[in-house]
Picture 1 (tube, one colour):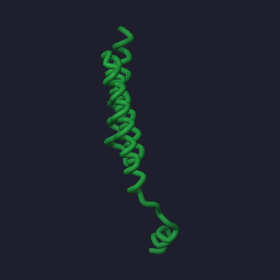
Picture 2 (spheres, one colour):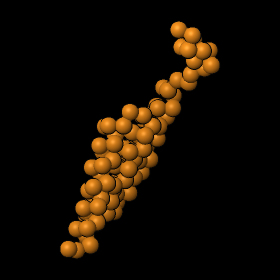
Picture 3 (cartoon, rainbow, N blue to C red):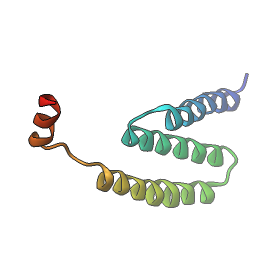
Picture 4 (tube, one colour):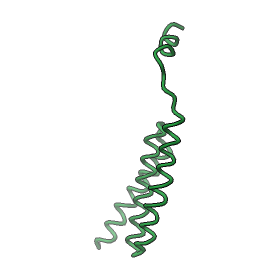
Length: 92
Protein backbone atom coordinates (compact mmCIF):
# COMPACT_ATOMS: atom_id res chain seq x y z
CA UNK A 1 0.00 0.00 0.00
CA UNK A 2 1.20 3.46 -0.78
CA UNK A 3 1.22 6.35 1.63
CA UNK A 4 -1.30 8.21 -0.51
CA UNK A 5 -3.84 5.42 -0.14
CA UNK A 6 -3.30 5.25 3.62
CA UNK A 7 -3.71 9.03 3.93
CA UNK A 8 -6.83 8.95 1.77
CA UNK A 9 -8.37 6.16 3.86
CA UNK A 10 -7.55 8.03 7.08
CA UNK A 11 -9.11 11.28 5.89
CA UNK A 12 -12.09 9.43 4.41
CA UNK A 13 -12.77 8.01 7.86
CA UNK A 14 -12.35 11.47 9.44
CA UNK A 15 -14.69 13.02 6.88
CA UNK A 16 -17.40 10.41 7.32
CA UNK A 17 -17.17 10.38 11.11
CA UNK A 18 -17.35 14.16 11.38
CA UNK A 19 -20.19 14.36 8.85
CA UNK A 20 -22.11 11.86 10.99
CA UNK A 21 -21.30 14.04 13.98
CA UNK A 22 -22.83 17.05 12.23
CA UNK A 23 -26.10 15.19 11.77
CA UNK A 24 -26.29 13.20 15.01
CA UNK A 25 -25.02 15.62 17.67
CA UNK A 26 -27.73 17.44 19.58
CA UNK A 27 -25.73 20.51 20.64
CA UNK A 28 -25.53 23.00 17.73
CA UNK A 29 -22.12 24.24 18.86
CA UNK A 30 -20.58 20.74 18.67
CA UNK A 31 -22.34 20.18 15.36
CA UNK A 32 -20.77 23.36 13.98
CA UNK A 33 -17.33 22.22 15.13
CA UNK A 34 -17.84 18.89 13.40
CA UNK A 35 -18.80 20.79 10.23
CA UNK A 36 -15.48 22.61 10.48
CA UNK A 37 -13.60 19.32 10.73
CA UNK A 38 -15.50 18.01 7.72
CA UNK A 39 -14.71 21.06 5.61
CA UNK A 40 -11.02 20.98 6.54
CA UNK A 41 -10.77 17.30 5.66
CA UNK A 42 -12.34 18.05 2.27
CA UNK A 43 -9.60 20.65 1.77
CA UNK A 44 -7.05 17.90 2.39
CA UNK A 45 -8.49 15.99 -0.57
CA UNK A 46 -7.85 19.02 -2.77
CA UNK A 47 -4.24 19.11 -1.59
CA UNK A 48 -3.93 15.41 -2.45
CA UNK A 49 -5.16 16.24 -5.96
CA UNK A 50 -2.53 19.01 -6.26
CA UNK A 51 -5.19 21.73 -6.30
CA UNK A 52 -3.69 23.92 -3.59
CA UNK A 53 -5.55 27.06 -4.67
CA UNK A 54 -8.92 25.32 -4.39
CA UNK A 55 -7.90 23.93 -0.98
CA UNK A 56 -6.95 27.43 0.18
CA UNK A 57 -10.27 28.83 -1.03
CA UNK A 58 -12.07 25.97 0.73
CA UNK A 59 -10.41 26.94 3.99
CA UNK A 60 -10.89 30.69 3.57
CA UNK A 61 -14.45 30.75 2.26
CA UNK A 62 -16.12 27.80 3.90
CA UNK A 63 -14.24 27.32 7.16
CA UNK A 64 -13.42 30.98 7.60
CA UNK A 65 -16.66 32.49 6.43
CA UNK A 66 -19.53 30.05 6.68
CA UNK A 67 -18.40 28.46 9.94
CA UNK A 68 -17.94 31.87 11.60
CA UNK A 69 -21.43 32.83 10.43
CA UNK A 70 -22.86 29.62 11.91
CA UNK A 71 -20.97 30.28 15.15
CA UNK A 72 -22.48 33.75 15.46
CA UNK A 73 -25.94 32.37 14.68
CA UNK A 74 -25.59 29.73 17.39
CA UNK A 75 -24.32 32.28 19.91
CA UNK A 76 -27.10 34.76 19.18
CA UNK A 77 -29.99 32.29 19.17
CA UNK A 78 -29.21 30.32 22.32
CA UNK A 79 -30.98 31.73 25.32
CA UNK A 80 -29.58 31.70 28.78
CA UNK A 81 -31.64 30.44 31.70
CA UNK A 82 -31.91 32.90 34.54
CA UNK A 83 -32.27 31.95 38.17
CA UNK A 84 -35.94 32.99 38.15
CA UNK A 85 -36.71 30.56 35.31
CA UNK A 86 -34.98 27.66 37.04
CA UNK A 87 -36.75 28.44 40.33
CA UNK A 88 -40.07 28.52 38.50
CA UNK A 89 -39.43 25.13 36.94
CA UNK A 90 -38.45 23.62 40.29
CA UNK A 91 -41.59 24.95 42.06
CA UNK A 92 -44.05 23.55 39.50
